Length: 248
Image 1: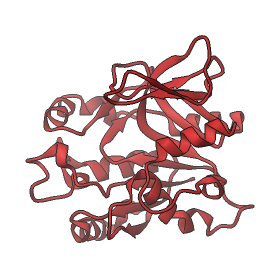
Image 2 (image 1 turned 30 degrees about the vertical axis):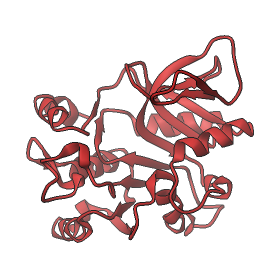
Image 3 (image 1 turned 90 degrees about the vertical axis):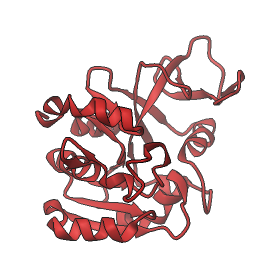
Image 4 (image 1 turned 30 degrees about the horizontal axis):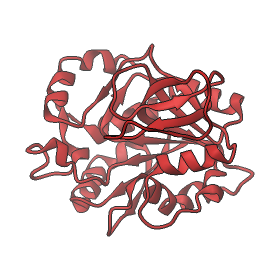
């Protein structure tokens, strides 16, 4: 299994920790977010990954070289302009297509600023059993941007930030409001379906694809430990919990 680590962002929410470094190199209990993410991926059977870079790009490249890529094959996807999640993924399509359609398995897409004990192997298995185009790690927690899923756990809508109205793919009697955890499993076919170009977010693309009856499904991760590391106070809180994350 291959993976992409999304590490190109400016890390503005993490200031002042990102005043002199990219968010991927912010430390949590003495380990960088990038190290934590790569080691979690490797522990789950990922030995090849691509990391997108923009802000302090050379610092990330030097860091990976100094640590011998943490025993993995690591490729770099440089973004001269920040491409957002969807644009960044599409730019890295070559990495996942290099084995050819017959030899390519689903892959992981992972934000660098989240940490979890999620079983990626179980998530991959679920994705394959569902025959999904995209599987999103989601959980029951408070969020300003919930995604909506129907009784079969198919994406059916979302609530937009600052707006009372719901954007529906299709309206259902009962929809589950779930928070996205920043981790996806994707089938290689996704690159044939992403018709958007340039800078674009992946969530609106998922909405478009779900409207076209593509299978975008929920993988519930409520039973796992998960942390957003997007703000300094969240990094400080996570430092006291690292023993839990190290055990997985």
